[in-house]
Length: 448
Image 1 (spheres, rainbow, N blue to C red):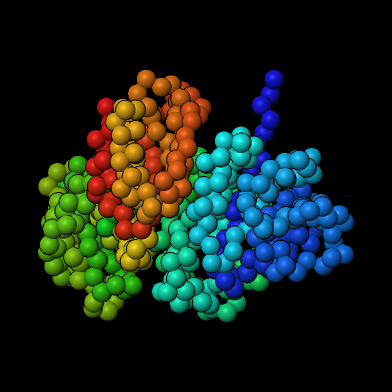
Image 2: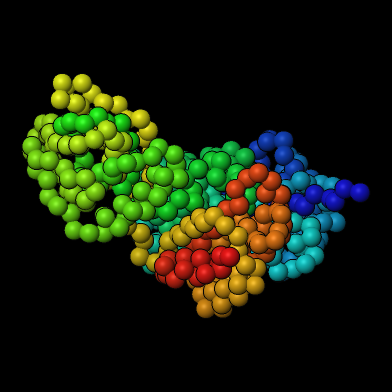
């Protein structure tokens, strides 16, 4: 017998004035053809035209467009239980929190109650952000910070009130705070219903398909180009770009497969930690050293590479080649094209408190060590860990183990078989003042 499908649930949050009411009005009044149950904390604020209400029974209102709207005057679990008596009336649930609420306790409801967990599945958390006022709110409100940290989708609203440069800067800050979230821009909360429903946000496969670099670590460089060179002297030319200098490490004997590039990337991280040797136009770039190319003079600048044997070299550069129109040429002036190019997740400044940690490691994990480590981590830092999710490769288990958590509550279960896929552990943590080195070391100690 087939197990009944759980009802997917999205949580809608956002600080006061961010546009939640406007979005809810759209969902409850527009003809979108979907059967949605909307659980509203303060129904009176929504202001739905009473002509849309075709039946009112206790706190559940059936809408003319096929939606159901519920008021929350008490316990969310009780309201969800009442909703299930009308299971044939809806296919999806959207829960809206108050503007001053931490969405964590609402999300935890779908982890901590066995009956609710059997009927409902948390599909994602949507946070509306007031583009015109969020920077002020972040400076004085913990709630607005936590609403961003919990999000799977960030709807950057009221974009018509902010110029493009400020929007780009704000979006970069939001991504710093929560690398897990997808950012969608809007005016007057004019987003399609599909933007907030059926997100699959707790499905890490879908997240990785959307953003392949989601779980990659950050590096102090952005771009790598691999060049196959014969013995001789080569000229590296760069035009004016966004910075007056560019850090660089040139690696020799570079293989082109991704594993070799990653290995060299880790080696270059250690080189980047060393003081850079200043290289001026017209000077030679040494191999295997951290250098800083000085680019403050106007026009194209030339530097030189000397190789004494046939070799592949890789440039691990702070900026992308296109930002400086970077070109490598031989002694005859012919341009050498890169055999392979690779873009990395560049390191950047993080917000003062909230940030993200992504861990990706091959191999199997000892279940007992993992349980002990997770238990200790949640006891000590669970309040500061807003969200976590990922895949684990448990020793002796043929299936992936998928987990997700909110604060100190964590839920996990076996997923599909590994099959021929590489057994890889992929984890994401979002929280306040997290010690990245300690968390990485704690997980690595669980590897077999």
